[in-house]
Length: 120
Image (cartoon, rainbow, N blue to C red; front, side, top):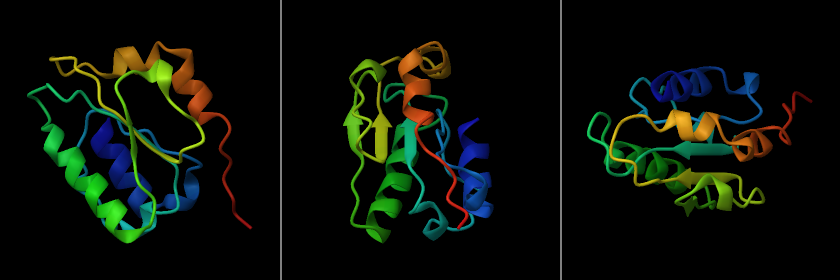
């Protein structure tokens, strides 16, 4: 879930090479400072009602305030530019199910695979 991804990554960021919270806000996040070095792909439907899109925007704003990096916004996973480490995939699906489109698209995995954990 998106909620769990945010929370775990904020608590144990060295465990992850990249995170991809999907349709979940960041309540439970202990520190946004710990998230600033991670590549992040957020997928959130901007028309859904279950989890407010604005809660994701607030999380993005907090991360952007702590770093000079900006999230790049895409409306389809097929157009994602993997050179950007912070990505928001804001599709216009009206229901809560953003994960099916993400998990069933090979570009989602192509985005995640190049990153490695740097524990040096």
